[in-house]
Image (cartoon, rainbow, N blue to C red; front, side, top):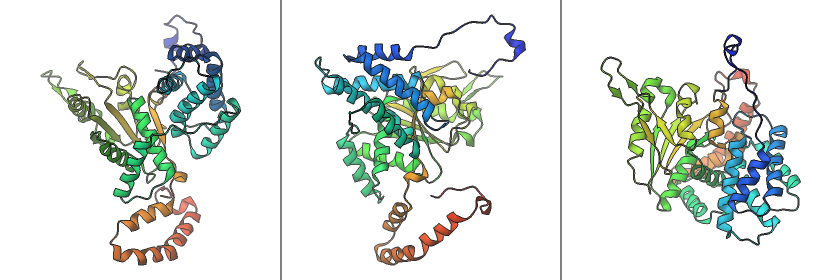
Length: 372
């Protein structure tokens, strides 16, 4: 891992000098390989954007500005370039627009509410004069809006954008983490995306578990030391089921609970490019591109940098949620005869009561809670 060795162990090893990789050169080579003609200029700007983001944005456990995140963005840029027509006469401005689109697609989802504005300003400073809108997924957005209406939820533009970003993250990475406080809509986000994909004739099979609710042996399986017989755990049993699914069926293994290094480090080979689950028995299960591991958690304070860098991130904050939308969605699910009275009563009393509660000092609350 990345932990420091104690001094008595250091003396047993010969010291080795290592040099830091040249990110600009790596980015330039990848962009040239993807077909970009102006890769030299673009690569230096993208690496500069990552360097400034690491220095100027707030320190968050789920941020990763390393080489793995950079490589993901460059590969998405290559896909966008191929969709754009892979033209040999493309101008520098057109190529920069595609790279900025890829950067926004992969990065905005994990930024906090305040950092999003700073990151937008950084892009404008480093790529002056280039205005770019987000990549448009018209069919998916229409399906999302239809699902919201069907589920009697209030459409919120920021939440629709998060669902699109989640879908893009799942198509790019094996693992994806949805980070946010209770009530910020993590499970709802998954339900909306699953419903929208069903409308687009894409079947999704879901296996949900809470890894912290059981010991590690029950989660990942164990071997009987006397009989040498292998017993599957909850996660390994789900893994066997998803690899049996046909390639056109998407499978989600959802781990709903805190991320603990005790069990998540065992999934590192699954979450990188190998997509390989090695069980304690020595058996290996290889997953196809139709399988995703999704983690719902409150924070990532216990996750190691190795785990964070392997996964896509969707960050949900309280500031993204509007209390009025939650209340309206609840009212819409009540019997129609009660709705007018409920709306007037809530307007009269509920919001005043909520404002009073939010003004109280934290010491007044028995359990730490969130606004939503």
